[in-house]
Image (cartoon, rainbow over all chains, first blue to last red; front, side):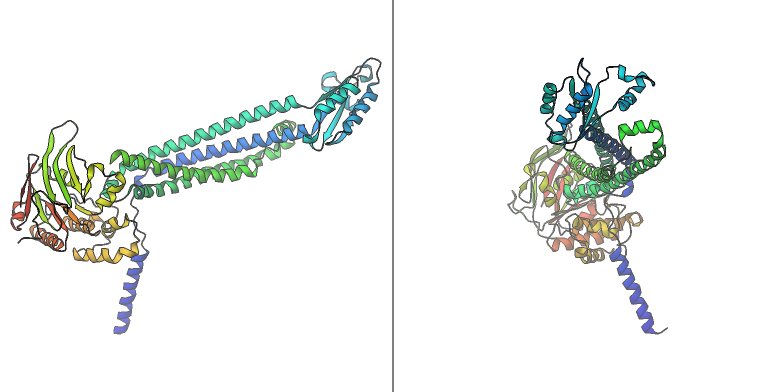
Length: 321
Length: 235
């Protein structure tokens, strides 16, 4: 080996040393191990999981309620009761004719005797001659634009022009469904708020614990002239990462549950019980809003964790200095 | 040997870096541990702060860099009344004072380089901008080959010099050193003292808290003698 080779090797070694020195990440001022990291990450993931499940349930109920309302609002019913000496079928046809003249009405269907018999079958059984009974005629009015229909005008014309006619716009049902759905959404939002408060409090305790176990570090930072903002940033960085990890883990688990639920529910949808559930909850599938919401919750929790730790550090420093 | 220029006006002057007037300190409802302290630290001065163990030297040093607030009296630091100094301005004042603690207070999880660079890092400076200065200072205090070592494997003397380098890196106007020679052998103690004298010649005011009479006798410097909570100044 020549002197030039030795010199080259020495230069290379020096360059590598310098590179390692330059590449070395500056040590974190708050050591990772001094923060109750794992326990808090688990708490944050559980909170994120619960928040995402709640959000999923809320969107499910909200979507189902919207479906009910739009389905119900797209139909109204005219009932024509038989009156002594009046041809009920003629009155029903007249009522259907009046309804068709209104703006926003897409069409009408007068239920015939067979359809009426089918509706009454659960109560009266089969084989009865319904022609002998004073069964009211039902007219289903389909609406193309529920908002445009003058329901009061229709009810008033039916009352004056058709004997025994009565308009049922399902408002009572809609109002009840609306109340129930609103109550469910309110409960869901309250649970979300409680979950967030619990998360914030957990982070406050964890930050204070971390500050206490890093008392020496904080003291040194103070006497070398660190501002509160600098110290807060050092802690905040840890908590932001921790919150992000926990938040995403919880949201991921919740999304997995949503997906699994949709797979488990789908095959049983053919049964009659499932049809009833489906009538109530629609497809029982969590919509894209819940998935996007879960990601949003994960980031929200991470930001909340970081901001909470920052505020806690400021307060702690103000109390102790 | 007389380091620096320790002459000051008897009652202090507007140029004093730190001025105490009738300062007293007590913890809670206990007795006053420091009483009626009146003195000043002039620019480019060199002084020993001495007294028996437990006399309150460390407590007085903590008052110097505003870690403690006096229960009475007036402390003026760089012409700012410490009693009305807002919390937000404390860091700026502390950056003008370098402190070497008796127990070093190095951060065990950081390397010597990182410990020494800490005052610059908290100022928000980029590492590339101070790397050369820190390396040069570490070489000056004889730690050029220990810069990537963590404090746990440094000797007492090396820790002492690392703590001194950390106190000096921000070019403070006042250096406070609490028993800087207490944990080192006599040759190293003399070497450290030479560093302090050199620093003082370069313009930094130096306050060395020590109870080592032999060490003080080697230097013809001002002495602040703390005894039973009272301070006597020997110019």
